[in-house]
Image 1 (cartoon, rainbow, N blue to C red):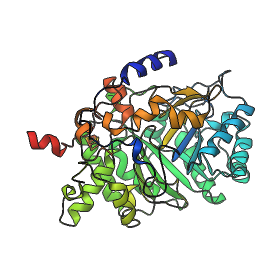
Image 2: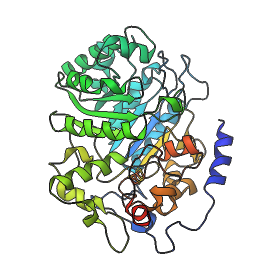
Image 3: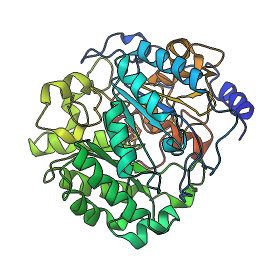
Image 4: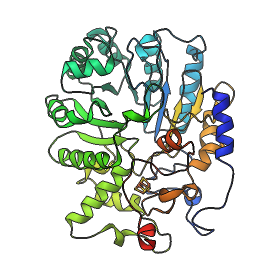
Length: 421
Ligand code: SF4
Protein backbone atom coordinates (compact mmCIF):
# COMPACT_ATOMS: atom_id res chain seq x y z
CA UNK A 1 0.00 0.00 0.00
CA UNK A 2 1.37 3.42 -0.89
CA UNK A 3 1.41 6.18 1.66
CA UNK A 4 -1.19 8.06 -0.35
CA UNK A 5 -3.47 5.05 -0.17
CA UNK A 6 -2.87 4.89 3.56
CA UNK A 7 -3.89 8.49 4.00
CA UNK A 8 -7.04 8.10 1.94
CA UNK A 9 -7.97 5.04 3.92
CA UNK A 10 -7.28 6.86 7.15
CA UNK A 11 -9.57 9.70 6.23
CA UNK A 12 -12.44 7.41 5.32
CA UNK A 13 -11.95 5.29 8.42
CA UNK A 14 -11.60 8.19 10.80
CA UNK A 15 -14.71 10.13 9.84
CA UNK A 16 -16.40 11.59 12.92
CA UNK A 17 -19.43 9.65 14.06
CA UNK A 18 -21.42 9.18 17.22
CA UNK A 19 -19.82 7.05 19.87
CA UNK A 20 -21.14 3.52 20.18
CA UNK A 21 -21.35 4.18 23.90
CA UNK A 22 -23.46 7.33 23.78
CA UNK A 23 -22.66 10.96 24.54
CA UNK A 24 -21.55 10.45 28.13
CA UNK A 25 -19.06 7.73 27.40
CA UNK A 26 -15.54 8.34 28.67
CA UNK A 27 -13.02 9.75 26.24
CA UNK A 28 -9.29 9.44 26.60
CA UNK A 29 -8.26 12.84 25.30
CA UNK A 30 -9.67 15.15 27.98
CA UNK A 31 -8.28 13.17 30.86
CA UNK A 32 -5.07 15.19 31.02
CA UNK A 33 -2.30 14.05 33.29
CA UNK A 34 -2.44 10.36 34.04
CA UNK A 35 -1.41 8.61 37.21
CA UNK A 36 2.31 8.06 37.07
CA UNK A 37 2.96 11.54 35.72
CA UNK A 38 2.69 10.61 32.03
CA UNK A 39 0.19 12.51 29.91
CA UNK A 40 -0.06 10.53 26.70
CA UNK A 41 -1.83 13.44 25.00
CA UNK A 42 1.39 15.42 25.32
CA UNK A 43 4.23 12.93 25.64
CA UNK A 44 4.74 9.49 24.16
CA UNK A 45 6.23 6.89 26.42
CA UNK A 46 8.00 5.17 23.53
CA UNK A 47 9.48 6.72 20.37
CA UNK A 48 10.84 4.41 17.71
CA UNK A 49 12.92 5.62 14.78
CA UNK A 50 13.39 3.22 11.89
CA UNK A 51 16.79 4.58 10.87
CA UNK A 52 16.99 2.43 7.73
CA UNK A 53 15.15 -0.41 6.06
CA UNK A 54 18.38 -1.97 4.87
CA UNK A 55 19.07 -5.37 6.42
CA UNK A 56 20.98 -8.48 5.39
CA UNK A 57 18.35 -10.80 6.83
CA UNK A 58 15.08 -11.68 5.07
CA UNK A 59 12.87 -12.79 7.95
CA UNK A 60 9.59 -14.41 7.04
CA UNK A 61 7.50 -12.06 9.18
CA UNK A 62 9.42 -8.80 8.54
CA UNK A 63 7.27 -5.74 9.19
CA UNK A 64 9.53 -3.55 7.07
CA UNK A 65 9.92 -6.06 4.22
CA UNK A 66 13.56 -5.00 4.56
CA UNK A 67 15.94 -4.85 1.61
CA UNK A 68 19.69 -5.34 1.53
CA UNK A 69 20.36 -1.84 0.12
CA UNK A 70 19.66 1.48 1.77
CA UNK A 71 16.98 3.75 0.32
CA UNK A 72 18.11 7.04 -1.22
CA UNK A 73 15.14 8.66 0.53
CA UNK A 74 16.27 7.79 4.09
CA UNK A 75 16.68 10.72 6.48
CA UNK A 76 20.18 12.15 6.10
CA UNK A 77 22.57 12.43 9.03
CA UNK A 78 21.61 16.08 9.55
CA UNK A 79 17.91 15.22 9.34
CA UNK A 80 18.59 12.47 11.87
CA UNK A 81 20.09 14.99 14.32
CA UNK A 82 17.09 17.28 13.78
CA UNK A 83 14.71 14.39 14.43
CA UNK A 84 16.51 13.48 17.64
CA UNK A 85 16.15 17.12 18.75
CA UNK A 86 12.39 16.80 18.18
CA UNK A 87 12.24 13.52 20.02
CA UNK A 88 14.03 15.05 23.00
CA UNK A 89 11.33 17.74 23.17
CA UNK A 90 8.76 14.98 23.63
CA UNK A 91 10.73 13.57 26.58
CA UNK A 92 9.95 9.88 25.99
CA UNK A 93 11.03 7.36 28.57
CA UNK A 94 12.07 4.98 25.83
CA UNK A 95 13.84 5.88 22.57
CA UNK A 96 14.61 3.02 20.20
CA UNK A 97 16.70 3.17 17.05
CA UNK A 98 15.52 0.31 14.85
CA UNK A 99 15.60 -0.91 11.27
CA UNK A 100 16.02 -2.84 9.06
CA UNK A 101 19.41 -3.11 10.65
CA UNK A 102 20.70 0.16 12.16
CA UNK A 103 24.26 -1.18 11.72
CA UNK A 104 23.79 -0.72 7.96
CA UNK A 105 24.26 3.01 8.59
CA UNK A 106 27.74 4.19 9.49
CA UNK A 107 26.34 7.21 11.36
CA UNK A 108 24.56 4.97 13.90
CA UNK A 109 27.26 5.62 16.50
CA UNK A 110 26.97 9.40 16.02
CA UNK A 111 23.20 9.15 16.49
CA UNK A 112 23.60 7.14 19.68
CA UNK A 113 26.12 9.65 21.04
CA UNK A 114 23.99 12.65 20.11
CA UNK A 115 20.83 11.18 21.62
CA UNK A 116 22.72 10.44 24.83
CA UNK A 117 24.25 13.94 24.85
CA UNK A 118 20.85 15.64 24.78
CA UNK A 119 19.37 13.50 27.52
CA UNK A 120 17.81 10.50 25.81
CA UNK A 121 18.62 6.89 26.65
CA UNK A 122 18.95 5.28 23.24
CA UNK A 123 18.25 1.61 22.72
CA UNK A 124 19.25 -0.11 19.49
CA UNK A 125 17.78 -3.17 17.77
CA UNK A 126 20.60 -4.58 15.63
CA UNK A 127 20.08 -7.58 13.37
CA UNK A 128 22.15 -10.69 14.05
CA UNK A 129 24.38 -10.56 10.97
CA UNK A 130 28.17 -10.49 10.58
CA UNK A 131 27.93 -6.71 11.16
CA UNK A 132 27.03 -7.41 14.81
CA UNK A 133 30.53 -8.07 16.13
CA UNK A 134 32.27 -7.76 19.49
CA UNK A 135 33.71 -4.48 18.14
CA UNK A 136 30.39 -3.01 17.01
CA UNK A 137 28.80 -3.89 20.35
CA UNK A 138 31.71 -2.34 22.26
CA UNK A 139 31.48 0.76 20.07
CA UNK A 140 27.75 1.12 20.73
CA UNK A 141 28.54 0.90 24.44
CA UNK A 142 31.27 3.56 24.15
CA UNK A 143 28.89 5.89 22.33
CA UNK A 144 26.26 5.55 25.04
CA UNK A 145 23.78 2.85 24.08
CA UNK A 146 21.49 2.11 27.02
CA UNK A 147 20.19 -1.29 25.90
CA UNK A 148 20.21 -3.66 22.98
CA UNK A 149 17.09 -5.41 21.77
CA UNK A 150 17.91 -8.63 19.95
CA UNK A 151 15.54 -10.99 18.16
CA UNK A 152 15.47 -14.65 19.11
CA UNK A 153 12.56 -16.72 17.86
CA UNK A 154 13.42 -20.27 18.83
CA UNK A 155 15.44 -22.22 21.35
CA UNK A 156 17.55 -23.97 18.74
CA UNK A 157 19.45 -23.04 15.60
CA UNK A 158 17.45 -24.93 12.97
CA UNK A 159 14.11 -23.29 13.81
CA UNK A 160 15.53 -19.80 14.38
CA UNK A 161 17.63 -19.84 11.19
CA UNK A 162 14.67 -21.14 9.21
CA UNK A 163 12.53 -18.29 10.56
CA UNK A 164 15.20 -15.69 9.86
CA UNK A 165 16.03 -17.34 6.53
CA UNK A 166 19.80 -17.05 7.12
CA UNK A 167 21.98 -19.94 8.25
CA UNK A 168 24.11 -19.06 11.28
CA UNK A 169 21.76 -16.36 12.56
CA UNK A 170 21.07 -18.24 15.80
CA UNK A 171 24.78 -18.58 16.63
CA UNK A 172 25.38 -14.90 15.85
CA UNK A 173 22.48 -13.99 18.12
CA UNK A 174 23.78 -16.03 21.05
CA UNK A 175 27.28 -14.60 20.55
CA UNK A 176 25.86 -11.06 20.50
CA UNK A 177 23.98 -11.59 23.76
CA UNK A 178 27.17 -12.94 25.35
CA UNK A 179 29.22 -10.01 23.99
CA UNK A 180 26.68 -7.56 25.43
CA UNK A 181 26.89 -9.46 28.72
CA UNK A 182 30.66 -8.91 28.80
CA UNK A 183 30.15 -5.20 28.03
CA UNK A 184 27.55 -4.89 30.76
CA UNK A 185 24.79 -3.93 28.34
CA UNK A 186 21.23 -4.94 29.33
CA UNK A 187 19.47 -6.88 26.61
CA UNK A 188 15.82 -7.19 25.66
CA UNK A 189 14.93 -10.32 23.71
CA UNK A 190 12.26 -9.92 21.04
CA UNK A 191 10.38 -13.05 20.01
CA UNK A 192 7.76 -13.23 17.28
CA UNK A 193 4.80 -15.48 17.95
CA UNK A 194 3.53 -17.24 14.84
CA UNK A 195 2.25 -20.73 14.09
CA UNK A 196 5.88 -21.73 13.50
CA UNK A 197 7.28 -20.52 16.82
CA UNK A 198 4.49 -20.86 19.39
CA UNK A 199 5.28 -24.46 20.35
CA UNK A 200 8.82 -23.60 21.45
CA UNK A 201 8.08 -20.85 23.97
CA UNK A 202 8.75 -22.80 27.18
CA UNK A 203 12.14 -24.05 25.91
CA UNK A 204 13.03 -20.57 24.73
CA UNK A 205 12.21 -19.15 28.17
CA UNK A 206 14.56 -21.71 29.72
CA UNK A 207 17.33 -20.69 27.33
CA UNK A 208 16.91 -17.02 28.27
CA UNK A 209 17.45 -17.80 31.95
CA UNK A 210 21.07 -18.65 31.06
CA UNK A 211 21.98 -15.01 30.37
CA UNK A 212 22.54 -12.63 33.27
CA UNK A 213 21.95 -9.52 31.12
CA UNK A 214 18.54 -10.44 29.72
CA UNK A 215 16.26 -8.00 31.51
CA UNK A 216 13.16 -8.09 29.36
CA UNK A 217 11.43 -10.57 27.08
CA UNK A 218 9.17 -8.85 24.60
CA UNK A 219 6.80 -11.36 23.05
CA UNK A 220 5.39 -10.02 19.81
CA UNK A 221 2.09 -11.41 18.55
CA UNK A 222 2.40 -11.12 14.82
CA UNK A 223 0.33 -8.60 12.88
CA UNK A 224 -0.26 -9.45 9.22
CA UNK A 225 1.72 -6.62 7.63
CA UNK A 226 4.93 -6.53 5.61
CA UNK A 227 5.86 -10.15 4.92
CA UNK A 228 3.61 -11.54 7.69
CA UNK A 229 0.37 -13.16 6.54
CA UNK A 230 -2.98 -13.68 8.28
CA UNK A 231 -2.28 -17.42 8.35
CA UNK A 232 0.84 -16.77 10.48
CA UNK A 233 -1.33 -15.63 13.42
CA UNK A 234 -2.30 -18.07 16.15
CA UNK A 235 -6.02 -18.28 16.90
CA UNK A 236 -7.73 -16.52 19.85
CA UNK A 237 -7.82 -19.57 22.14
CA UNK A 238 -4.13 -20.25 21.46
CA UNK A 239 -3.46 -16.62 22.38
CA UNK A 240 -5.27 -17.09 25.68
CA UNK A 241 -3.38 -20.34 26.34
CA UNK A 242 -0.10 -18.59 25.60
CA UNK A 243 -1.02 -15.81 28.03
CA UNK A 244 -1.39 -18.49 30.70
CA UNK A 245 1.99 -19.96 29.81
CA UNK A 246 3.72 -16.56 29.83
CA UNK A 247 2.11 -15.62 33.13
CA UNK A 248 3.34 -18.87 34.67
CA UNK A 249 6.84 -18.31 33.28
CA UNK A 250 6.88 -14.74 34.59
CA UNK A 251 6.63 -16.03 38.14
CA UNK A 252 9.81 -18.08 37.92
CA UNK A 253 12.22 -16.01 35.82
CA UNK A 254 14.25 -12.96 36.81
CA UNK A 255 13.59 -10.98 33.62
CA UNK A 256 10.36 -9.17 32.91
CA UNK A 257 7.91 -10.30 30.27
CA UNK A 258 5.79 -7.99 28.22
CA UNK A 259 3.68 -8.53 25.14
CA UNK A 260 3.72 -6.46 21.96
CA UNK A 261 0.52 -6.14 19.92
CA UNK A 262 -1.29 -8.27 22.51
CA UNK A 263 -2.67 -5.55 24.73
CA UNK A 264 -5.19 -8.02 26.15
CA UNK A 265 -2.41 -9.66 28.16
CA UNK A 266 -2.99 -6.75 30.58
CA UNK A 267 -6.60 -7.86 30.91
CA UNK A 268 -5.52 -11.47 31.41
CA UNK A 269 -3.01 -10.62 34.14
CA UNK A 270 -5.44 -8.41 36.00
CA UNK A 271 -8.01 -11.21 35.93
CA UNK A 272 -5.44 -13.63 37.37
CA UNK A 273 -4.43 -11.24 40.14
CA UNK A 274 -8.03 -10.70 41.17
CA UNK A 275 -8.82 -14.40 40.95
CA UNK A 276 -5.87 -15.21 43.22
CA UNK A 277 -7.49 -12.93 45.81
CA UNK A 278 -10.86 -14.67 45.44
CA UNK A 279 -12.30 -11.65 43.62
CA UNK A 280 -13.36 -10.72 40.10
CA UNK A 281 -12.52 -7.69 38.02
CA UNK A 282 -16.18 -6.62 38.21
CA UNK A 283 -15.53 -4.84 41.47
CA UNK A 284 -12.87 -2.68 39.80
CA UNK A 285 -15.33 -1.16 37.36
CA UNK A 286 -16.04 2.51 37.92
CA UNK A 287 -19.87 2.71 38.02
CA UNK A 288 -19.84 6.17 36.45
CA UNK A 289 -17.76 5.30 33.40
CA UNK A 290 -18.20 1.55 33.11
CA UNK A 291 -14.43 1.09 32.71
CA UNK A 292 -11.65 -0.17 34.89
CA UNK A 293 -9.23 2.61 35.74
CA UNK A 294 -6.31 0.27 36.09
CA UNK A 295 -3.63 2.93 35.86
CA UNK A 296 -4.27 4.02 39.45
CA UNK A 297 -4.81 0.46 40.49
CA UNK A 298 -1.58 -0.80 38.98
CA UNK A 299 0.59 1.96 40.34
CA UNK A 300 -0.58 0.93 43.78
CA UNK A 301 0.21 -2.71 43.11
CA UNK A 302 3.80 -2.33 41.96
CA UNK A 303 6.25 -3.93 42.24
CA UNK A 304 5.01 -7.39 43.09
CA UNK A 305 3.07 -7.80 39.86
CA UNK A 306 5.82 -7.27 37.34
CA UNK A 307 4.01 -8.94 34.41
CA UNK A 308 1.46 -6.14 34.29
CA UNK A 309 3.94 -3.95 32.53
CA UNK A 310 2.97 -0.89 34.47
CA UNK A 311 5.72 0.01 36.85
CA UNK A 312 8.92 1.86 36.19
CA UNK A 313 11.97 -0.30 35.93
CA UNK A 314 15.65 0.32 35.73
CA UNK A 315 17.94 -1.73 33.58
CA UNK A 316 15.11 -2.93 31.38
CA UNK A 317 13.54 -1.20 28.45
CA UNK A 318 11.22 0.70 30.69
CA UNK A 319 7.60 -0.17 31.03
CA UNK A 320 4.80 2.31 30.87
CA UNK A 321 2.84 3.33 33.95
CA UNK A 322 -0.36 2.56 32.04
CA UNK A 323 -1.46 0.84 28.88
CA UNK A 324 0.45 1.98 25.79
CA UNK A 325 -1.32 1.57 22.45
CA UNK A 326 -0.88 2.92 18.96
CA UNK A 327 -0.64 6.76 19.18
CA UNK A 328 -1.43 6.50 22.90
CA UNK A 329 2.05 6.78 24.35
CA UNK A 330 3.65 5.41 21.20
CA UNK A 331 4.96 6.94 17.95
CA UNK A 332 6.95 5.44 15.08
CA UNK A 333 9.04 7.39 12.53
CA UNK A 334 9.86 5.53 9.33
CA UNK A 335 13.17 5.57 7.45
CA UNK A 336 11.88 8.34 5.15
CA UNK A 337 10.44 10.41 8.00
CA UNK A 338 6.79 9.36 7.80
CA UNK A 339 5.09 9.30 11.20
CA UNK A 340 2.83 6.41 12.18
CA UNK A 341 0.97 5.39 15.35
CA UNK A 342 2.89 2.09 15.17
CA UNK A 343 5.31 0.32 12.87
CA UNK A 344 2.52 -2.18 12.21
CA UNK A 345 -0.18 0.36 11.34
CA UNK A 346 0.34 1.93 7.91
CA UNK A 347 -1.78 5.04 8.52
CA UNK A 348 0.45 8.07 8.05
CA UNK A 349 -0.07 11.17 10.20
CA UNK A 350 2.65 13.39 8.68
CA UNK A 351 6.34 13.60 7.78
CA UNK A 352 9.11 15.05 9.93
CA UNK A 353 10.80 16.63 6.88
CA UNK A 354 7.81 18.99 6.59
CA UNK A 355 6.17 19.07 10.02
CA UNK A 356 7.13 19.00 13.65
CA UNK A 357 7.03 15.57 15.27
CA UNK A 358 5.73 17.25 18.42
CA UNK A 359 2.76 18.72 16.52
CA UNK A 360 2.01 15.45 14.74
CA UNK A 361 2.04 13.47 17.97
CA UNK A 362 -0.03 15.95 19.97
CA UNK A 363 -2.38 17.42 17.37
CA UNK A 364 -2.79 15.29 14.26
CA UNK A 365 -6.34 14.07 13.73
CA UNK A 366 -5.22 10.48 13.41
CA UNK A 367 -3.28 10.44 16.68
CA UNK A 368 -5.98 12.30 18.62
CA UNK A 369 -8.69 9.96 17.39
CA UNK A 370 -6.68 6.87 18.20
CA UNK A 371 -6.28 8.17 21.77
CA UNK A 372 -10.05 8.44 22.06
CA UNK A 373 -11.30 5.07 23.29
CA UNK A 374 -14.94 6.07 22.72
CA UNK A 375 -14.26 5.53 19.02
CA UNK A 376 -13.63 1.84 19.47
CA UNK A 377 -16.19 -0.45 17.87
CA UNK A 378 -17.56 -3.92 18.45
CA UNK A 379 -16.73 -5.62 21.69
CA UNK A 380 -13.60 -3.52 22.28
CA UNK A 381 -15.94 -0.49 22.17
CA UNK A 382 -18.06 -1.70 25.07
CA UNK A 383 -15.39 -3.60 26.98
CA UNK A 384 -14.72 -2.59 30.57
CA UNK A 385 -11.00 -3.12 29.84
CA UNK A 386 -10.92 -0.68 26.91
CA UNK A 387 -8.82 1.96 28.72
CA UNK A 388 -6.40 -0.61 30.08
CA UNK A 389 -6.28 -2.71 26.91
CA UNK A 390 -8.11 -1.33 23.89
CA UNK A 391 -6.92 -4.17 21.65
CA UNK A 392 -4.36 -3.99 18.88
CA UNK A 393 -5.40 -1.24 16.50
CA UNK A 394 -2.78 -2.49 14.03
CA UNK A 395 -4.30 -5.97 13.94
CA UNK A 396 -7.83 -4.58 13.70
CA UNK A 397 -6.71 -2.54 10.72
CA UNK A 398 -4.82 -5.30 8.97
CA UNK A 399 -7.55 -7.93 9.44
CA UNK A 400 -10.77 -5.87 9.13
CA UNK A 401 -9.68 -2.68 7.33
CA UNK A 402 -11.16 -0.59 10.16
CA UNK A 403 -8.68 0.71 12.72
CA UNK A 404 -11.38 1.00 15.41
CA UNK A 405 -12.78 -2.52 15.08
CA UNK A 406 -12.25 -5.21 17.72
CA UNK A 407 -8.99 -7.06 18.01
CA UNK A 408 -9.84 -10.39 16.36
CA UNK A 409 -7.49 -12.38 18.60
CA UNK A 410 -9.32 -11.76 21.89
CA UNK A 411 -11.65 -14.37 23.39
CA UNK A 412 -13.00 -12.10 26.12
CA UNK A 413 -16.69 -11.33 26.25
CA UNK A 414 -17.20 -7.90 27.82
CA UNK A 415 -19.70 -7.62 30.65
CA UNK A 416 -21.92 -5.30 28.63
CA UNK A 417 -22.36 -8.00 25.99
CA UNK A 418 -22.69 -10.85 28.46
CA UNK A 419 -25.52 -8.96 30.20
CA UNK A 420 -27.50 -8.88 26.93
CA UNK A 421 -26.81 -12.49 25.96
S1 SF4 B 1 -12.49 -7.07 24.01
FE1 SF4 B 1 -10.97 -5.61 23.23
S2 SF4 B 1 -10.64 -4.14 24.93
FE2 SF4 B 1 -11.65 -5.98 25.80
S3 SF4 B 1 -9.97 -7.28 26.53
FE3 SF4 B 1 -10.46 -7.95 24.44
S4 SF4 B 1 -9.07 -6.81 23.10
FE4 SF4 B 1 -9.11 -5.79 25.12
